[in-house]
Length: 207
Image (cartoon, rainbow, N blue to C red; front, side, top):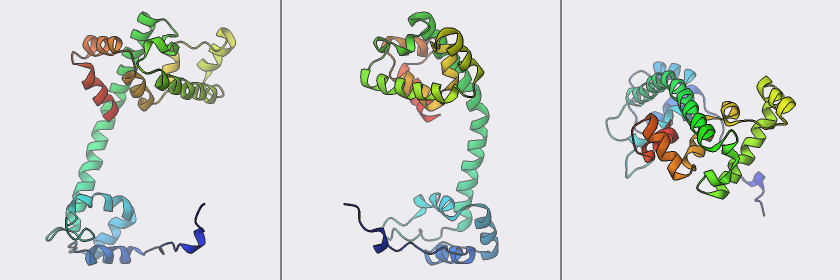
C-alpha cells in the first residue's frame, strides 16, 4: 500500500543567500558570499553540491572537512566541465568510427540482418530485449527518418545493420557489442584496435 503523500512535508525552497548560509553552516569556507551567490545563480545548488561529496568529513558526514572552501568545490566543477568539453569533441569521432567497424563486420560475417540472429550473440535474453528496444526505435524513427521510410516502402521493413545502426544511441551500441558472440568481439577488437575485447567493452561503456 502506498503511503499517504500528505503526511510528508516537502522542503521549502531556499534563496541564493540561504543556500550560501547552508554551506557556511556546514563548515565550508566562503571568503566572498556575494560571489558565491552569483555562482549559485548560474549553477544549481544540488548540481554543485555533488562535487563536494568527496569533501565531506568522514565522521560528521553533514559537515565539510576542516579548511575546505567553496572555491575548492567550484574548482572541481570547473575541471569536470572542461574535461567533458574536451571529451565531447572526440567522442563523436570515436562513436562514428565504432559504428562503422561494428556494422561492417556484422554485415560481412553474419549478413545484412545478422544483428537480428540470436546465434550471433552470447545471451539470448539480452539479445531479445535489445531487439525489442530496436524495434521501438525503428517505429519511432519511421515518422521522421527518410531512410527508414525507404526501407519500409522498398524492402518491407527489413533494415540492414549498416542503416539501422544510425538510429541507435551510443549506449545501445555499447550493450549490443558487449553481448556479441565472443569470437566477433575478439575479431573487432583485434582488427581495428589491437587490444583485448574486454578493453573495448570497458571503454565503450565509459564513453
